[in-house]
Length: 280
Image (cartoon, rainbow, N blue to C red; front, side):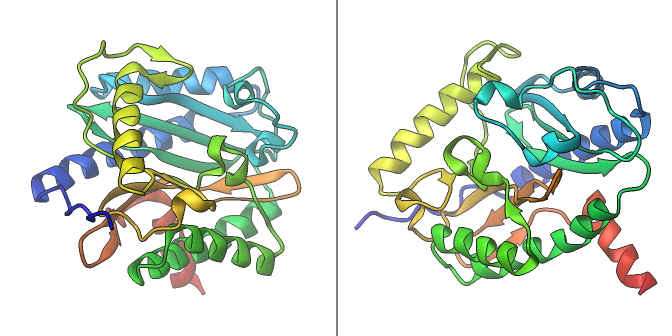
């Protein structure tokens, strides 16, 4: 039986990861305030990249993404190339999703920010219900359920809501992946297939190491994820959809040797839910 690794980070490390996550969401909010009808996905990702680089980002886990309209629900996605920003123009009433994964001093964040331009009642409902998935995932991980079972619990909740699973469209059908401190020595700022070269080096090393121990750094619903949550940091991204509207959050989940908790509750979607609860 393989030995489960100990939690590898101290408070200083967690503070650094939190800083990068806050930086990521701050830039996403800046782009959300800038975005308006007529903007294309490519323009949105360029603006997001500019904001991140200006804030001190040296490298990317993956390039920034932006999806508008029915592309927020990954409708008609058949190849990985369709995830990259395209010429889709934002119009009144459209939902959008911004996704970025900056690296600063080797510390990585991977975030997803959902928004809309104008009124969209379906988006409002999905955005409110998204809280259920954040609570569910934390509860199941704290119970040390196998990751594949947590994935199945999310699917069951989606069925109960009448929504559909859109994270299953991601390569590997993943709802999350482990995040480690990037110590690779490849060239910073160089991307291959949308991922930083240093990211690919680190991911490859972690994938081999974890598979040898009977675990996977990729969190999906298959056999490779039939193990308890590995101590460390996990970027978790439940992506839910209804018809032509999709929404997600993505943030870092801390899994210690004995507990689990979200790295930071001072995030846009958490603040939005708190305001809704106060108004109820």
